Image 1 (spheres, rainbow, N blue to C red):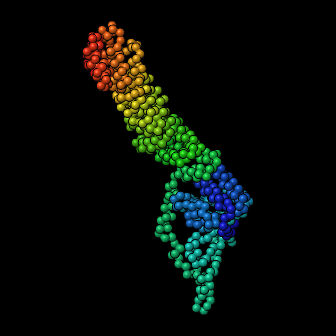
Image 2: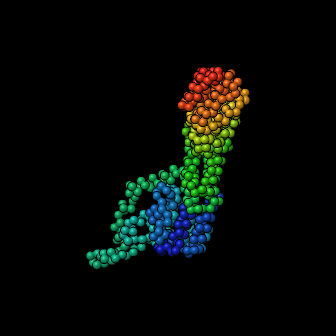
Image 3: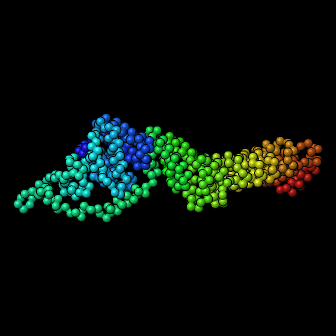
Length: 566
């Protein structure tokens, strides 16, 4: 039915109810524009809209809205606004002449459904419409939805001339109704009679009814934008609005599930630009709500984890997308937006890469994801081939943080390949990592090259932690596990990392002992002298001078031999 909409001021709480109703209407209209008519999400959106409407109407009795260019008002309060590129709800209503809507208490579900379907029908700007919103509303005769409409072609000039359009009877075409104003009463012709409405209509300039060049261009641009609009963008908008309005989890969950399926389908069909766009949008939503610990963060993480698994990723290699030059840029963008749990699968794919370009693409993706969390690489490092682990060791060296360093040391300790172990150790040493406690066990490594590299690392700077570790190690008697040269290397490292405390320990070792040991000397005394030389302290120099003039030949010999190893 078509009746003028009352312009009542909002009552207590009415503005909030109107905002909720319009927000639900906008969301439902967007859902209708995205999903097929048989999709259950449509039914959910309709039920939610109707529930909001009936609850608000039960409290308010009626909700009267006015439609203006780019905004919807409740009384004088703007309850919804749209830019031309943000939506089509207001555009569809305003374009087809709707200037007011009133929802009445007692609204039934079939009326809400019909109203929503009409909006959906004309919201997408069809090129050759077979009607308009006003016509369909008039034919539907919804008992609890009233509307006010004008003839859109005459709207501007008719309003200016004092005309309005009454759509109540007989139908959507409307009738011109003259509303006399004070200016109209004063305007008389030469014989004193008032100007007749039909005369005013005759004076209307037909050219003024046409769209200006700017207006036509704006309309064309809007149509084109809607035609090219990616459905995923609209879904993301719906998702954000639902989360901001604290919508229930069940319905939001259906939207989230939509994205998971869309990404899986995009990967499977080679639509990587679309996949990247959706993944980027999900990450934007996640970032917007992450600080508050909102539950949607976990839901989005579950989606990202799901599409980061082998079921979604392995087909990329099986279908040849990774080796297709036309797909590689899109694949690279999409892979970079996955969660780090994809690292294990991507590493396995890198082992089986068909060519160098494919392997580089995958390694680049691995580097990007590992920069966020390298932890998932641990499994790949344990199970990967020698070549893969050699590559990953170099990659870990480019990452920051403690975890990459721990993974490199894990390779050094456990990987069976000497080539990989030495590569990992070299990368760890050159990467600026410094953790003496983590490195120190390597001084007992079976590989002489690893032992030597570890000692060079630990003796590369003055460090109390490294000094304490060497003091504890050297205070214990030699176990004979390694040759005497290894102990000597340990004394050398202590001299380079130690302090005055080490000097006292080394002096005691060099000058002390029983008389017999001082007569014949030992490798330990030589090592102590080497450490004192490398400490470079004044106390150390004085101790070496005393040792050089000692009455015990073993002590003097130790000082002379130490010079050969400094």
